[in-house]
Image 1 (spheres, rainbow, N blue to C red):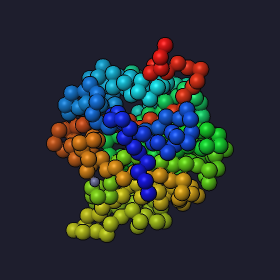
Image 2 (cartoon, rainbow, N blue to C red):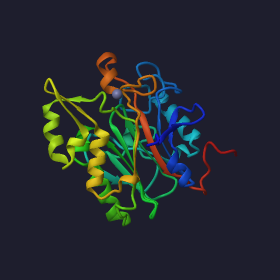
Image 3 (cartoon, rainbow, N blue to C red):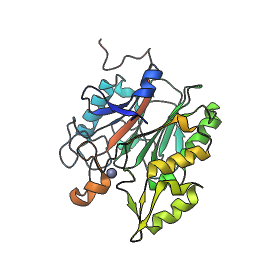
Image 4 (cartoon, helix red, strand yellow):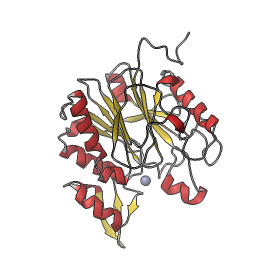
Length: 284
Ligand SMILES: [Zn+2]
């Protein structure tokens, strides 16, 4: 399968081109680590306000991304992520864009059908899930580390879209973004005991144990959950980018935090441009 997250013109983010080209006005992608203002260990395109970086650098990085994707910075919307499975409907843009004080509290998933809202969430190895209902236009982002995955945040998102936007699972498009791969994500029995009970087909995501340790592919585990929810296989696009293999491109908590104490965060972003709203990147 072709890689869905594509670098275009050396910009510091990967674009979900198959969605952007199919749906005019949609912006979708995932940032990389270079091209921003933050200093080490957040060098340099850190998007997270919660990891100890200088707030002014983070805000400058966020504004730079907004400008490059031609969405006003006022549309940037984010939540406090807690490795849970709660998803939240966004009815107004702007939460958490410059400060943690007004961030949406304790939600690892955000969804909306409004234009002019740029949904964002933050990563250093965890799995970004992107949702798009082409019928209603509803979009969603979910942050799925191992905890969010085994607590089936993907299902919470699908159920919320069904309830609020009458989304049919067979219509829904899902993209799975850059994250730690099955090549690098070694887990122990404590995690495996929850993996085995979270979905029928968990075995497709696990390499048989060696020395009591397992290699877990969280992208495949989320795919297994999505298939169980009647999402069509041909509507699921999954990346091959591994954040731990490619620390030249991405922040990796697993790889870098033990050495540097912490690291920066990439952002997943998804939004519909509002044609009535002037983008900061557009000519005035
Ligand atoms: Zn890897």
